[in-house]
Length: 265
Image (cartoon, rainbow, N blue to C red; front, top):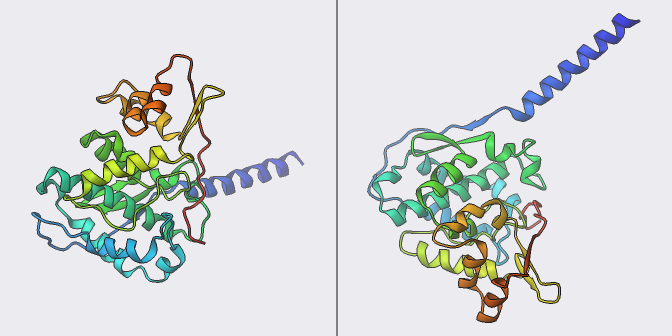
């Protein structure tokens, strides 16, 4: 009897081990190598993808895109062999922001239908376990965001243009970023995010400010050139709200993050 129980336990452990390895295995998206001009880069294919699949609320028609992924795949082929280091600073920033957003979309449609990126590989595996080819190297989304964008382009406003395919993320825009418009659109995206009561809300009666968890997770980023989150926010709020934020008795509370997929359906 004891031997039978032991055998059953071992079998259960084996099954659980297989499931564990399956859910945590790395998935690598490989791309065919081809030559590209290193002095310029076209985001036109991604721009077309966004215009055709993103609505005014920043939601994506993943069903349609999964059925017709050709333009997105074409853009990912270009990303795989691009030479961003040969571009200007603004062009590099636009390149990596577009790359991150495009690869998030790719990760979603590869595992669609799903209702959340958190259901694609357990324990944040969507960001840590899926790997993509960019600029001749293999990266996870986590490596692109934290190892490249946050490290090489030290600007807290980037958090309002990087989209993690979730409801509480900033809405994805329906056009790709470029070297010419990245600065203006960073500023506009930040302003729109701060002005959105679902992301930043002031309760004068309770002396509280309710904030997106983005401000908590990346608190250190809002100390680059600022004295913290409050100091950063006052640049994007009317004077009366700015004064309220700087009062000593005001408490900051962070809102629950909604990881529901930013899906039109």
